[in-house]
Length: 86
Image 1 (spheres, rainbow, N blue to C red):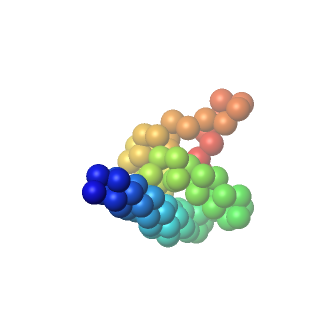
Image 2: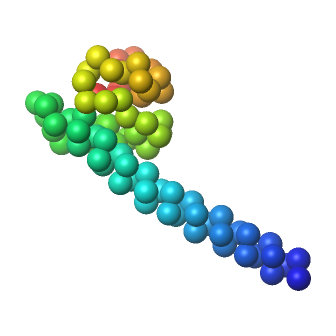
Image 3: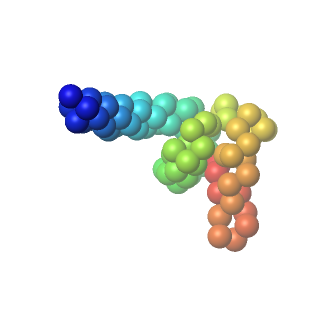
């Protein structure tokens, strides 16, 4: 009885994390598309925005001035100490 309950709970946890990752990917794509719509290098902007979104679980609104909306996104730096997130 206990073994089947533990198995069920583990399976539920694995499935819920899979669906969360899928929904987060959709969220990041949607938010980054809006944020990078006016960028000069759209593909590069989308790449780094998506990386930052997946790590921070948020993306500031489309304007560059709104980085205060997501502190993790704002504060992430590259290896040179410059802002990583567009």
